[in-house]
Image (cartoon, rainbow, N blue to C red):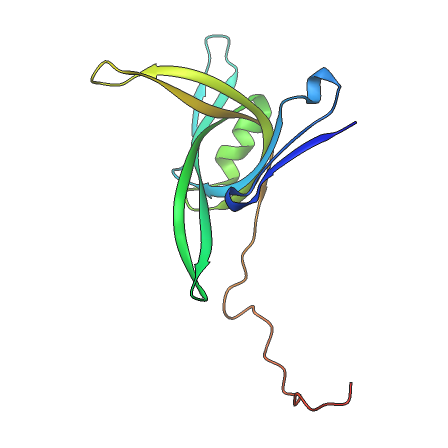
Length: 146
């Protein structure tokens, strides 16, 4: 039996089944907020970090208006981390699948805050059509019989 939660205004889908390893899975589409940064752990394991902006858009009087933006910190490990750094840059629109993780940090003013992070397992670039790539408007009249 599968549970599915969709927060479509933010482009977030959280899915899960009764299988323990799939209880915490997220698929999310957004824009890289900065270039991925590659670091290595003490045991030489690759770790890649970047921020992901997920915007909410809605229509007001027929016009699209930008709403809230949610920010996530995303981490990839191992060979995936190295591939992410080689293939993606700030501004790319991507779809990420992974699991949610919660972390705490202390601000410069001493406040403890909580962050919702994503441990990535898959990433795919989302290509956007440019105006030049968009299909040409139809030259057929609206009165066409078909």
